[in-house]
Image 1 (cartoon, helix red, strand yellow):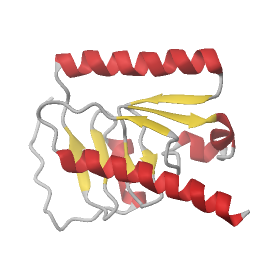
Image 2 (cartoon, one colour; image 1 turned 30 degrees about the horizontal axis):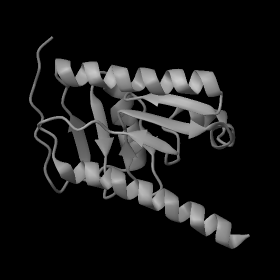
Image 3 (tube, one colour; image 1 turned 135 degrees about the vertical axis):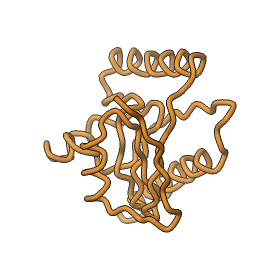
Image 4 (tube, helix red, strand yellow; image 1 turned 135 degrees about the horizontal axis):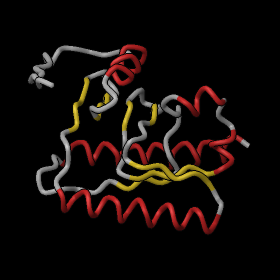
Length: 152
């Protein structure tokens, strides 16, 4: 198979529906989308990072298997976040109650929720901006929890 470089104009914005079509048509490509609709193509990772990622994923999976408290996900899972972004953390976990609240269709596509717990391993070449965005999502989740408690 021939490979071709992709040059994406910085002004290109991708809707949720377009993102889902692109992802389905390009299963071997790790795609993400930020909150403003910009398409992000994630490069493959190196050996040491892959080794660390599988260790992290394995530990989360093993903990979840022992506790039966929720559902663990690897880096191939993209979540449709409340801010409109589609992101794939290196590892993620969602409580069973929140997972069960999704419809089967939502579970089969990009789950429309922010995971309760995420792990993002920073490699040597990672830009801090996307990692800071993930940290911001954790803050959004905490704010959501505080709002729900306040609403009672």
